[in-house]
Image (cartoon, rainbow over all chains, first blue to last red; front, side, top):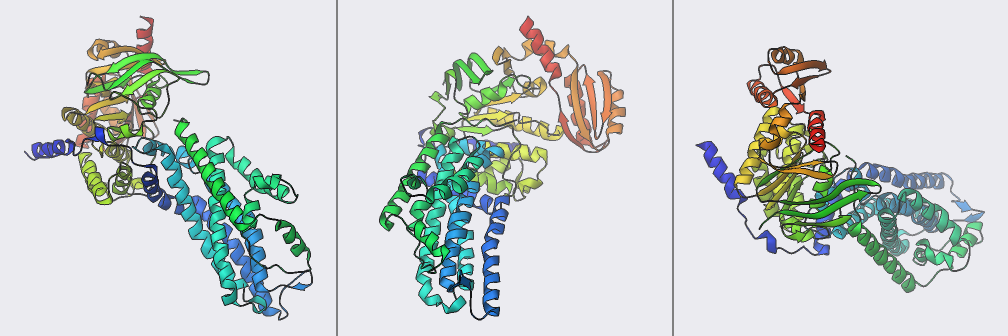
Amino acid sequence: MNEIQNQNHQNRNLEPRTPNSVRPTPPVWSSAIRIFDLSLGQMLWSRRSVFLALLLGGPVAIAVVLRVVATLYAPGLQINGARAPGASIFGIMIWLLFIRFIVPVLGVFYGTALIADEVEDKTITYLFTRPIPRSAVLLGKYLAYLACTVLLVLPSVVVVFFLIVPIGGSSIGAAFPSLVTDLVMLTIGLAAYGAVFALVGTRLKRPLVIGLVFAFGWEPAVLLFPGYLRRFTVAYYLQALVTHEMPQDSAVSLLLQVFHEVPSVPVSLLCLAVIIGVTLWSAGRAVENREYVLEQ
Amino acid sequence: MASVVAADHLSKWYGQVIGLNDVSVTVPPGITGLLGPNGAGKSTFMKLITGQLKPSKGAIRVLDEPIWGNPALYHRIGFCPEQDSFYERMTGAEWVAALVRLNGVGDQEAASMAARAIEMVELTEAANKKIGAYSKGMRQRIKMAQALVHDPSLLILDEPLSGMDPLARRRTIRMIKEWGRAGKSIVVSSHILHEIESMTPNILLINQGRIIAEGNVHQIRDLIDEHPHTVHIKADQIRALAREFLAYDDVLSLRLEENAVIVQTGKPDAFYARLTEIAASGEHGAIHEVTSPDDNLQAVFQYLVKS
C-alpha cells in the first residue's frame, strides 16, 4: 500500500506545473547572475585561489620587511640617494607589483580558464544543457572571476598601504584618497585583463602561453617605445589612472616619467570600457558557436 | 507529436573521423533504447540530440524544434550525461537546486523542486551530504535528479546504469519505467542489451556511426544469446562468489582479479537475475559494481553488419 502511495506521489510530481513549452529563454544578464552565484564559491575554494593567496602574500611580505627596515634605520628609505616617502614607495609598489605583475598574472590564469576549467572537469555539460544562452555562462564566470580577485587583491593592497605609507612620516589621511583611486584602478585593471584573456581563452589554442607572452613580453616591450603600438596594450590606458607622486632625481623617477606619457583619464576610461565590452562580446560569440567535445 | 527526435541524413565528423554517418531516424514517444558498442556513435548521437554538437551535415529536430543554438528547448529536455563529473564540494541538494535555478526559478522554488527530484531518485537521506562522499550508484542517481528536476517531457539518459551495483541497477530500471509510464519520453543509451531490454522493447541499434536496426528488441534477442556474455563484478568476497557461480550451468568460464571476478555466461538474463538475488540477500558480502565489456555485443554487431 505504501509503495502504491509512494508511486502515486511520484507520478503526481511528474505532472507539469507550468507549460515548459511556452517558457522563453531567460535574458543573458539574469542567467549570468545565476551562473555567478554558482561559480563564485567554486572559484574561491579552487586551487587557483591558493596560488592567488600566495601571490598576494608577496607584496605584504615586502611591505613588512620595508616597514621593519624603516623602523630600524631612522633616516628612512632611499632610492638612488633620494629620500623616498612612504606614499611614493606605495605608488611604486602599486605600479610595479600590482598593475604590471599581479593583475596581468591573475587575468591570464583566471581569464583563460573561465570555460576551460569546466571543460576540463567535464561539468560544462550541466551548464550548456540548461535554458540559458551560452554567453551567459561566460559572462557569469567572468563576473565571478572579478569578484573573487577583487575580494582577494584589494585587502592585500589595503594592508600594504597601512604598512608602507607611514614610512618617512607620510600622512595616512592625506594619502587615503589616492588609495581609493588605486583600488578603483586595480578593479578596472582586473576587469580589462580578465576580459582580454577570456577572449584569448575562448578563441585561441594554447591560451596560457599566448596570455603570458602578451602580458610579460608584448606589453613591457611596447611600452618602452613611443608610437602607436602601445595603444594595443591594456597597461597603456591603466597608466593614466596612476596618481602617485614618485621620488624625484632618480632613475626610477625618470623611468616612471617615460611611463607617464599617457592619454587623459577620460580617454583611458573610455578605451578600457571599449576593450572590456568588445573582448567580452567576442568571447561570448566564440562560446555560443564553438562545439566542446569532452574526452571520455 | 509524431516523434520526439527526428534526424534527417544526419552526419557528424571530427576532422577526418566520422562520428555519425548519414543517419535518418525518428524516435517515437515513450522509452527508446540506443544500443551499441563503445565507439559506435552513441555518444555522438546523444550529444547531437542534446545540442552539444552541431551537425556537420543534415538536420536534427528535438520535440519538433531545432536543438543547436536553441536554449529555450532545454526547458523541455533533461539530460543525464555519461561522465562522472560534479562540483564535488556541493551537497546533492545544493547542486540540483543550483542547476534548476538556471531554468529561471527562484531560490525557494528551486530548493523544493530539488527536494522533490531527489526524492524521486530515492536519495533523500543523502541529499545533504557532499557529492564527493557519494557512492557510484548515488552519483548516478543525483545526475538523474538534475535531469528531471525541472519536469522535462523528454529525458535523455547516457549510460545511466554504468558502474552501478545490482540493487541500484534494479532500482534505477524501475524508476525509468515509472517515468515512462508517467508520460515522459525517454532516450536511454547503453552497450548492454539486457539493461535496455529490461526498460523497453523499442531499440535503435547503432554501430560504426550508422543505425543498423530499429524496432523491437526481441528480433535480435536470440542473436545476442548465441554469444557468451562477459560480466565484471567487484565485490568484497570474490572467492565466495566464484564458488557460487561455479555451480551454475550457464557459467562458461570464470577468473579472479584484484577485488573482482570476471564471468562468461551463456544465459545472461538468468545470470543477472541470480546476481541480483545474491546482492539482495547479502549472502556473499557486498557487491559494489557490475560492468560488462561490450566484446560480446561487438560480435553480434559484426554478425548483423555482415548479414
